[in-house]
Amino acid sequence: MGVDVDLTVIWAFVIAFAVFAYVVMDGFDLGIGVLFPTFEPGQERDQAMNSIAPVWDGNETWLVLGGGGLFAAFPLAYAIILPATYPLVIAMLLGLVFRGVAFEFRWRDKAHERFWDFSFTAGSFVAAMAQGMILGALLQGIEVQDRAYAGSWWDWLTPYTLLTGLGTVVGYALLGATWLIWKLEGKAQVHARNLAKRAALGTLALMGAVSAYNLALDPEYAARWLSAPEIYLTAWVPVATLVLAALLLRSLGGEGQSLPFWLSIALFLLGMAGLGLTIWPNVVPPDVSIWDAAAPQRSQTFMLVGVAITMPLILAYTAWAYWVFRGKVGTEGYH
Image (cartoon, rainbow, N blue to C red; front, side, top):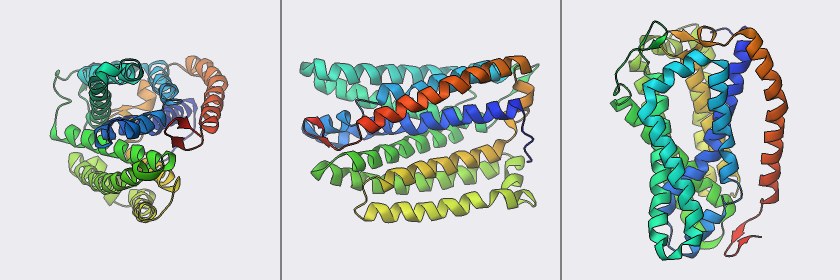
C-alpha cells in the first residue's frame, strides 16, 4: 500500500479532492432538498432555500472538474466507468436538472409552488441516490475485458449499491441539516437540529453497514482492514471515526452553531479516506490501477499546468462567495 509519488498519483489526488469538494458542497444542497418536505411551507422553506441560493450553482463546478479531470487524466477509467453506470449517470444529471429548474421557478411561479417544491425534493433525492449507487457500483467491482466494460446493463443494481445509495442520501441529509443549524434561527433551527440528530445516527449506522459489507464483498478488501501489516495503516480510520462520531453527537446535543457542520465534513473526509485505502491503487476495481488508466505523461503535465492555474481561482471565488454570505438567514434573506 505504499505510495510512490509521480504525476499519476498527483492526478489521482487532484481528482479525489475535486470529488470530495463536490460531495461536501453540493452534498448539503442536496441534503436540504431531501429534508425540504419536513419544513413548514412558506417562511421555513423560504429560509432553507435562501441559505443556499448564493452558492448552490457554483458548488457544481467541482462535479465538472472531477468528471472532466477523470476523462482527461484517466481516459481508460472514464471509458469503463461510464458504460457500467450509464443509467445512474443519466438519473443523476436529470435529478440535478430538475433540482435546478425547481429552484429557479419556485420563486417565479407561486401558483405552482407545491409542484416545484416536490420537484426540488425529488430531484435532490434522485441525484443523491444515484451518486451513492455509482460509488457502490465502482466498489463492488466492474467487469473488464480487453480494456473495455464487459458487464450487462443492470450490473450496477445490487443490494450493495442500494445500501451505498441510501447511505449517501442520509449522509447528505446530515450535511444539509447541520448547514441549516448554522444558517437559520428560531423554530426552523430547532427543527434542523432535531433532523441532524436523526441523520447523524442514520449516517453512522449506514457507514458501519457499508464497511461490514465491504469486508464480505472482496477478500482483498478484508485483507486491507483485518490483516497485518495493512491493518497498522488503516486502523486509524475507524478509531478516528468513533471519536468524531462522539464529538458530533455531543455538539448536536448542545448549542453549537457551525461546529456540527464542520464535524460532519470531517466525518465525510474519513469515509472517503477509508474508501481510498480500500481500493488503492485501483481506479476501477478489481484490476485497473491508476497507472493502467492514466493518460500519457505529456498530457498529464500539460493539464496539470492548467489545473494549477484554475483550481486556486475556483477556491478563491468559492471562498469569497461563502464569506460574503456568511451571516444568518432571516425571513428576508441574509443579515
